[in-house]
Length: 426
Image (cartoon, rainbow, N blue to C red; front, side, top):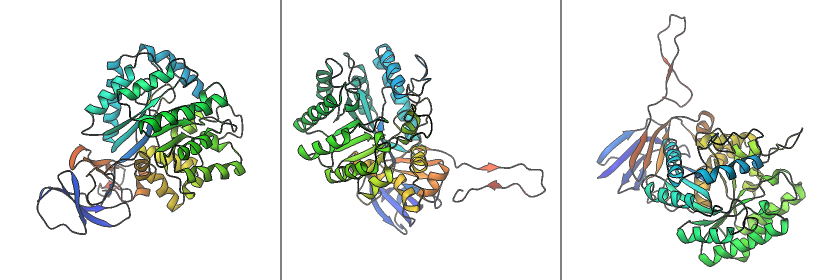
């Protein structure tokens, strides 16, 4: 006796199957399920995907756009300045409530895992307390990982080291950093060394904002790769942004990508934000400021995508739709080949989950029954349409549901009214 069975499902590889769920786990995936179930849902041939994963976000700053002022220059530097003014005014309750609203938006879009960086620079750890409470409260519906992020610099900000260690003592999950924001290149290198030592001593994984700049001389990613090997953290380190990869020459890019592949590091690009913030100081031609996604994937480097921001001092747009993120990655990265489009889809599903080391993720027997039913027939069509999430399922229970989208045209013609259907939609 199954708890739930999805019939007539199209899997990401294009095969048709029924998915049987029992006790919160996937019990069977077969061409046709003939047993009994407490509930059966005929998904009508629509795509059933593992849930979307946002491997880079900032829950503490989300939904704050315009509270102080909007970022009129569109630069990373102005965003940081606005955030520095804003964060002393925020209460723990406000941070919690805004972050919870974002999580609810995420769940409705089929996003069931978020890795959020939390600013540990303030003397009073209001954001840390708020997001640790949210992480616990939202656990039944969404997985939240927290990264201790010394946003004002590990060495640049007095007391930052002690505050980061305190956040880890409170239960924050990963060690973060921002080496390119330190006063000098040398201090940036030293900050990576110090933060990796903290992670190794505590048995924690690492995710650093790294080389988020158009400056081709910013080369902290190679230091991260070396430290990953030195401290034995292969498979447990991610470099976020790596925007300077768009500015470096091909000779150095080849060396760096080889180092990243050898180290077992993952790379997290943030297409919406990277294409918005980078290249702001260029006239023409303008750089795109995105990590070299195609070359990284070809070298075997795990690449995930993050939404990074929704309505905050850096980006006043966004709805936490990871398909929008993947679509931007495909466009900006010239990833429009068949397999490349699938790579972009994987960057917001299985590859992002791999970088986040999520247990029990995926559409396979024995995995946790987390999945999303999309009003599309394939991952590429989902990228094209950004379709309705018909059902969002967590541990075998439907936690969000939307009616199928249809449009009826009332034209001045004699034929019978019929819904207008896009390919794969019902």
